[in-house]
Image (cartoon, rainbow, N blue to C red; front, side, top):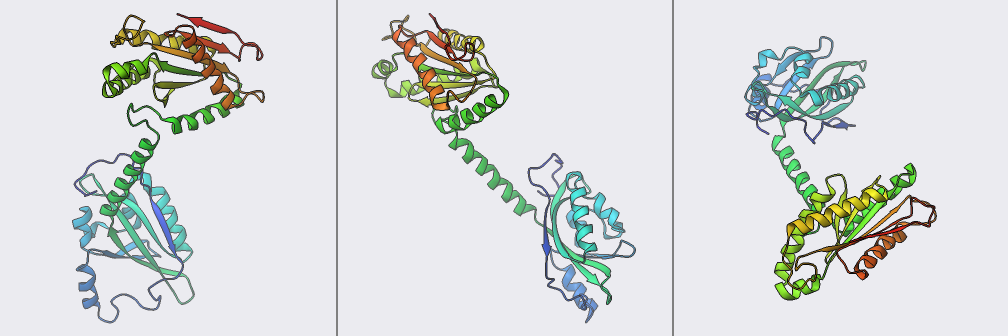
Length: 350
C-alpha cells in the first residue's frame, strides 16, 4: 500500500520475523570503512534504506535520505529508537519491538516485517534486515541494517489470500442457489452434533422437498426450473434467518441445521418457510395445490447420545419428509426424539 493511502484499519496481514543464524556481514568489517564516500554514494542510490543505531545510547547515528521519500520524515527526525517504534503501526509495534530487542540482545541477526506509519497518515509495509555488530568481547556495539519497501509484495499476498478465501467459499457453496452445498452441510452437521452432544441441548434438522418439481421442469423447462430453485432458496434464507445453516441437499431438496432448537421451534421455522413460499405465489400449473409451487417438510429433533448417530438422525428427518409427501405434500411431518426418551411423537400439519 502506498504512502498516500490513509487507512489504518486492522489488517489480516500481521508482522513477521526471521532470525539469521549466520550473518552475511563480517562483524570486523563496517560498511564503507574502505572508502566512506564511495560506500555512502552506493547506499544512498539504492531503494534500500541503510541505517545504524548505537547500542549504548539507542540513538541513530545514520539513516539514508531515501527514508523521507518513503515515509515523509526527514532523516534529521530519526534520533532514537523511540522515533522508530512510534512510527510503527500500533498493531505491530509491541511484537516487533520485543522481537527485535530480544534478538539484538542475544547478538542474533534478524528480519522483521511491519507496517511503518507515514507522515500523511498512511502506512507502508517495511522489511527491516538487521545485523548486530559486536565488540571484541562479544558485547553488542551497534545495529546496522536496511529497510525495504515490501508494500507491493504484501498487496500481492493480500490478493492471493482473498482469492483463496473466495475459492474456499465457492467450494462450500451451491453454484446455482448460493446456499451451502452438501460438503458444507457435512461439516456443519458434524460440528453442531458434537456441540449438542457436549451441551445436552436439542438439535433439529429440517428437510425440504419442492412438490411436483419434475412436473414443473417438464412443463416450464429446466432453465425456468433453475430460476424457481433460486427464488425458493432466497425465501428459505429469509425464513430461517442468519443463525441457521441452509444448504441444498441435492436436486430440489434443501436442508436446515437448527442448533439449540427444540421440536416446537423447529416446526415453527418450517411453518414460516411454508407460509413464505405460499406468499411468493410461484405459478405451477401442474400442481394440485392451487397451481402454485409448494414444499413438503420433514423435521427431526434429538439430543445426541450413543443411541443414535448422524446418519440415523438424517434418516429420521428424511423419513418424516417422505411421510409428509405420502400424506399429500404441502405439509410438515415432525418427530421429537429429544422429548420422550427415544419413543418420540409425530406431528403433521396441513
